[in-house]
Amino acid sequence: MALLIKNGEIVTASQRYRADIWCEGETITRIAPNIAPPPGAEVVDATGKYVFPGFIDPHVHIYLPFMGTFAKDTYETGSQAAVIGGTTTFIDICIPGPADDPMAAFERWNAQSTGKSACDYSYHLAVTRFDDRAEQQIRHVVAAGISSFKVFLAYKDALNLPDDELLGLLKLAKELGVVTTAHCENASLVFERQQQLLAQGKRGPEWHEPSRPPVVEAEGVHHLLTFAEIVGAPIYIVHLSCDEALRVALAARCRGVNVWIETLIQYLLLDKTWAERSEFEGAKYVMSPPLRDKRHQQVLWSAIRSGLIDTVATDHAPFDFADQKAMGKDDFTKIPNGIPGIEDRVNLLYTYGVKRGRIDLHRFVEIASTQPAKIFSLFPKKGTIQPGSDADLVVYDPDYRGTLSAQTQMMNVDYSAFEGFAIEGRPHVVTVRGQIAAQEGLFVGIPGRGQLLRRAASL
Ligand code: URP
Ligand code: ZN
Ligand code: ZN
Figure 1 (cartoon, rainbow, N blue to C red):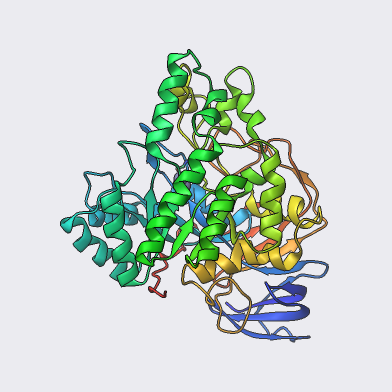
Figure 2: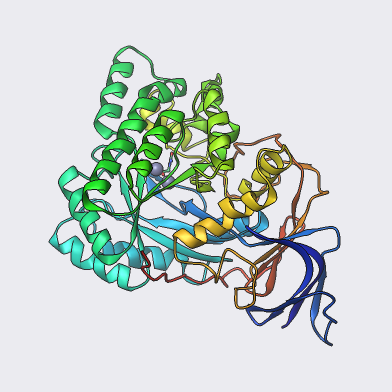
């Protein structure tokens, strides 16, 4: 069915103007003032609303097997939560265990996602072992359209990739022209600090941050970017949390290293005192890298505003407080790391970024949609509003007022990391490839309509 979005104010990373958007099938075919609604077309009145390109979350985990359990959201629940919150594309991480084959992991992830997602999605391929067998299979997965890698310098003896294997992988990334995304914390230093703290009887969630201080993250960034500099491979640093790590990344960028930087909505709005809450409540806020001292928030916002940080993601990794976070009740190193956020990122970024005057509307669209699309080979199909782009649109109501709560969220997890946070705006209507998928906070789309986005290597 054809769809007409009328009377809205279109906002992209570089333009702001009033026009109607005509979508035929899955695609935007015309943008012009005063398009007359043809008979039978579905019409969305966007008077008083912004129209943004569908937002893209470049770093989420769906049903992630991790720390002895699985992140709670499936492709059904996670994708519907995404769409309600204005995210029409996300990139999950396909993670083989060190003993697993990359192809088997790719097939397993496809079995979990095919026909289940409400919106489009892709994966980064995590590489947790790099030998000849893995390399051959990685080449096949890239040829199948998964054109970005993920490496973990953290999570000792679980996911972290040793240096010689990292070197081999970065050479392959350069040869194939794919970007390597990286979790940068030094696994050995974290392990050492964890053992010291536990030996001192420091076992609660408040000790998670001291076990991996900013210098440990900065070392990880320096380490990875030194390898990237030698090899000449492009890097995307995920979930950068602090001033120290940012400075190291920027210094490498100044030396000519091709590096993009992602931060997360939670680092902008929450600080380490949340993980210090009593009665084990702090476990809800245990993630890696950890929430930092409040002083880092100002640094991160400034870096976003000035273009030094490229994207804002969620690293959505929901674990129930009652029975999953509780696995670390007597030992913070056993608390599953991660928090939910896929549903809330856009509204939080709009409210606490745009409305509070920290970033303008264009930067908002750029960091949460356009840049992820460009970096991960989805642009201009995704990430902008122009004829030929997918009709992924967010008709956004800036007059909406509400409050985030676990009681009302779609995400399949028993708490909200942003419980009680005021929201000053939310999607009125969200379309996925030309079909209305969410309206006023409710999912109204077709659950399994999302497609795996196969991305060409482009660097
Ligand atoms: O704490 C986090 N970030 N959990 C998810 C896994 C990861 O490191 O991205
Ligand atoms: Zn990570
Ligand atoms: Zn992650």
